[in-house]
Length: 251
Figure 1 (cartoon, one colour):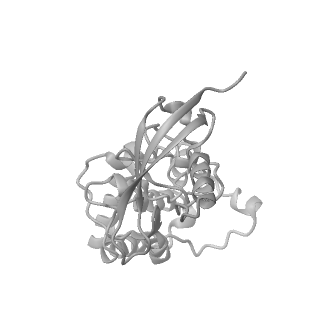
Figure 2 (cartoon, one colour; figure 1 turned 135 degrees about the vertical axis):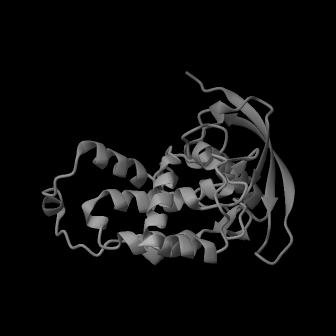
């Protein structure tokens, strides 16, 4: 069966480099397959721009399977677009109507420098991980690690936190550009597991301190981060991070 065809008008943020002023540019695409992914739509646009001798739109992507966390842009004011629990690369045009107008811009936060067009530097998230998101316990191979008994409920909570792919959508969605959901997922995952106990106290202090130094804002319980997260990370992990931080600060 032939897929539905739709026409889309785009308004995309174009910026040559971090120092250059940026602006929105308008484009129109006709006869697109509704089965096409959002990034495939940008591929079609870039192919046309290249043939016309124009600069293609720069955007982040890698696996295009919703796993790596590389892709990301704000579509009509929503990080990763309107579909809940979906990364930008897994968003398809069938979720839009014929003739829709889409405004596409990069993730905006003081800690995320715009490199070019829709590409932002999210290495600040890596710096937070380097500050404390690791363990020093040598468990050997997987069979050795699996010999440590962990209650099923605890293991599932840790796995839910570990689902974070570090895409930065939570930062882009937060009115304060806070990275609390990202940090809490990392802290919560390791605080729940025996392998994460040696650095448990310092981890919360160091990662929150790194987050503040890098220019991320504070959490004000808006819950926009939870709504935007493509992996459904719960703000319950932020509550655990707060407890971990207070314990470390007091003791």
